[in-house]
Image 1 (cartoon, rainbow, N blue to C red):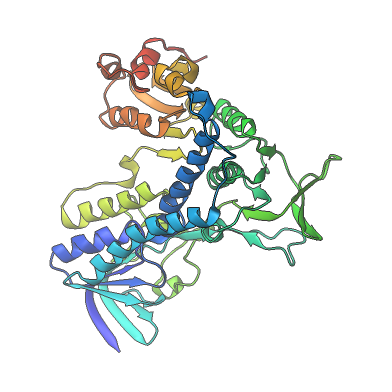
Image 2 (cartoon, one colour):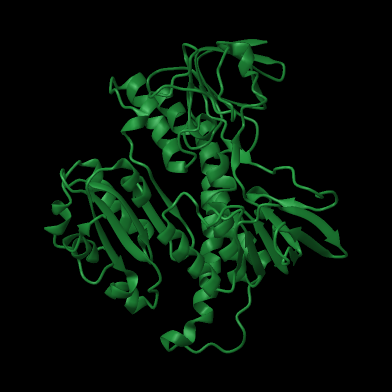
Length: 459
């Protein structure tokens, strides 16, 4: 049976629902297709549940440090993992269920449950139903990569999605991958009470960041008792009784890590391999991402790709901005572009890392004259008062234009402070706008002007 629509939205991740709402408001008849859980990765297995669990882990961490603040607790601090999971599940449901209800109750919007596959450039099939539209928006997200490694037979390997179902405390969690997902889960479960070892193939953690950031992150994690193994060029698994044995180095004598459970956190891939894209002539790159232009149009007229499946961000905020870019161009006559946005993201270890714009390494590679401001968190009063002085603040500025090129805020409230810098970058204003601002005391942000007043030339 064929049904005609003005627009079809495939997937209900961060870009899809908002776009569906805008299209309906513009008078279009819209079909929204969802094969799994409403809300995509962010709501179900990403940002919202993991940050809920990070909050539980921080509560345990602060409770163990209570004596540092003059607070006495009787007895050992323990974590009820079933209660942690139940809290996380309630928070997820509070985000997912209203989204589902909103879409299903929206006049002009039809929700279709099932797996969508392209029949041609303007038609997709869901089971026995054929849906046709002149505009199709692909918002299918991505999933964790589990690479082939020697000896995985009989060994259960978890991904970030699997971690959402863990309601017990692993004895020794082996995390393969030293970037965002691996570090957040590693610190989280260490604070819950597990022994944790992080194995990273590269020479340092979070390799996309500057070396001073990577070093500080490693110090924070190792300071909490997390074991870090770097330059693990040969990784494989075997089982010895109840233990999982990870072979982590082919060149040294210390070649094994013995644990109880394994989390694989080595990257993600787009959910584009089972959409029938070839039948519509929709091009993908060598990693499976749908190829789009600066306004997220594919090479097929009337087909757009948004969110993690287009390879242009893979964050909740970039996915939502994809929706804004498409809606602005299609409905508002506003020629917004993906290239207008500034790179920005956070690493939610504790303390967090807030990042915006270029790294110091990128600034150096550009060859431009630049200034660098730096301040350790030990010289930030708010951090000292809170007893959280790990990390530092760093800002890079173009010496000629006085515009901010990039920043890294690793420290207490760094995930929020970064926005005061990011907003000035979007305004294309000189850094002196911040140095002349009167900030509120006592805050972390109040030391950003002080840091900028003390900049020195980048050698």
